[in-house]
Image 1 (cartoon, rainbow, N blue to C red):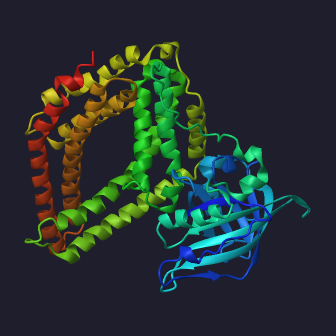
Image 2 (image 1 turned 180 degrees about the vertical axis):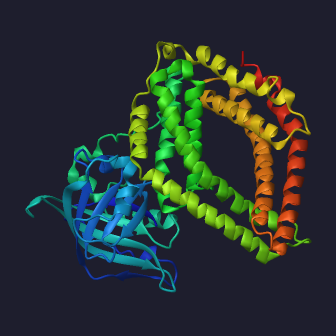
Image 3 (image 1 turned 90 degrees about the horizontal axis):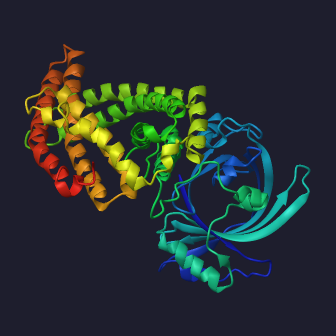
Length: 506
């Protein structure tokens, strides 16, 4: 569940305005009976969850009393996940969802918040709740139940309405004297300045106009570590990433890119630090890769099967193929879950947080980026364009040869992506053009793997003749895609290697 809300500070003298004008035509604002909510928040002693914008609480009286809230990239928008469970025993599933934040540190009670809530629902003509407005009188309690603080706030939470309704209600509240419209959770206000300190995971800060090579390394590491760890809970939940790509895909790409960046920047980072980190990232990417590969195949199966409406395939046979893939996916995701619960992964998360804080750089990293970086990118570029790369790529070569070039192309593209923000427009142009090359090579590889997979699944069931026919027709369509991608490759490669895109390379 995604929670989207805004909070407003008000004093005891504040009078909530008439909200009827915020309802659409024919709708109404409906008052609810007041309730008292008592929430106990758990965190590490140094408030790692609160500082990262997350929370784990038990709230008495809720049908699902245990709730984790996780931040998103949008202020005021959080993922909210609730589960049943007794007081004092947070469900293991919820504790796992904040693994990348607590990193194995014990979770203990840190504050108790009692809220006396008066609420109003903004409804449409049919009675659907579009938004909820609550007026909360909050008391902060210590372990003995004594009051240690108090405040009042008004909160507007979007339900089934559009985002502009938040602004409409907010405007009415501010006109009556409410302040803010930002977002600070209750437990953060209750815990005070310590809960508002910087999180352990250092975020990318952007590059200056004349960065050092080390600045570029640091920014690249922080970007991919942030992406990897942000998608950890979404992978555990089997939830979408919100970017059009699955969370498994995003986490796998972050692992691969970070590993690639450490390879590209090898002269700028300490070997004793980077090598073991790259090895652990390779392990993680491999586990995620197995799940992602099946995910791609299942999506591709449906697209390939319906690609030609004038020549339909046996839907029951397609379903049997999908069933076989679904079982592979289940096994692969179980392996992902086991990996994310392991001590090995927990140690990797700790290492990644430290890496984002302060990558271990060499003296050479102090060199200006424009001076040091082009030569580092030249190495994967030469591997891609050299005698064992594109130059030796025969249109009739085996699929494995094309896949090898694809891997070299991906390394070169990742290298260009990592340095492009600090270099010229030509570098950014090359990055975009290489993305086009990778699209062609990626589609080639996906089609080749899919063709082999459909035939292999059918071979496992030799008595299923309808399946064999369907798999053969699917494989023919995939091989046609392979041929088309090989035909498109020369033009994509020509665009990428124009002088105006590559002249910055030594």
